[in-house]
Image (tube, rainbow, N blue to C red; front, side):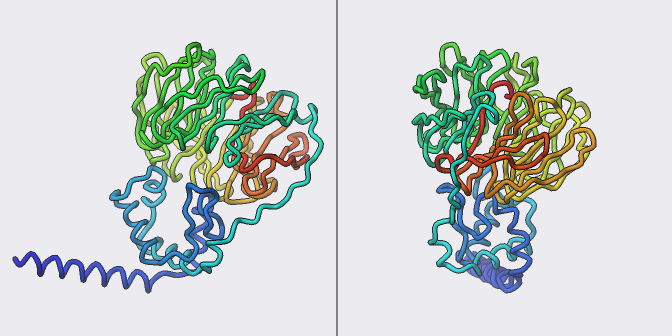
Length: 416
């Protein structure tokens, strides 16, 4: 066979297919399907932060090429590989048609961030100190004190030690974990981790921190007494966050690459099982029911899966707001609350009946955590540079408080 002729024929067929796909894209369908993309690329195709590219006005052929590459694995990114895996050729064409139809001028415009009036902050809404990472400000802010501690670039996930003495925060830009002394806000260490660290959690006994390295597919284990790395645990693609059982014997890890939930034996520091979670896209964050028999798994799109951990069976998939977000089972065990960075509301799920209700909070809710007494739910509003406070007695928005730039994650002592 003439190899040159074959290559030319193959290229021509590929171009013909691409041309047909371009013509087949439906803008209206693409707009609907793009709701799943809003959590990173915005409702108008404008990336919510520097790490997410603008898609507004991008050429259709380019979008089709990149989404197809993520789908077939020739371009690697744990999040995008999981997102694209479920897309059909028609889905890709529709998304490309929608994003390319958006005015290019929008791609150059800065997102409109509402100005939030500073509200009084008191110990009533913040009975314990709450620590919040400011992604763009590269800082940690404390409430109700409203102190600001200078951190590293792209401050992301946070965790507090049980004794309330150390605050940990990941910086994926530097592949590092920043450690702060909570008594004065000073940095006491910067510890190198794996690639693109995201979630960080502390074992219930306060001895170790586990950092989920989404880029390298492993967990960094740090001994907190010495602030040294003592182990690396290999898991599947895209580990994003961790939840320990109360006795510390097991760690559940969301695998945003799509495999489900990894189960770690913390004694041997080995992955012993993977629980598949069908019905959702890219397991993102999770929390456990009070009896630790059920996992509430938030995905990267707009779902929460309710998983029976003993059988591995998904009991229910609940539709929530668009985009990714945190999820927290309140310390009293009655509700699970989840955010949605691509929307303007949080969803509160009754853990017994699995009925859900939405509460409007403001633009771009992502981090979410309840107070130790379960009376207050704190929500970071990434699109408003503010913190929303929900009163759980009334399930209504109590107040909003102005914060630094791009408030991301929340650490509350007594609610790991």
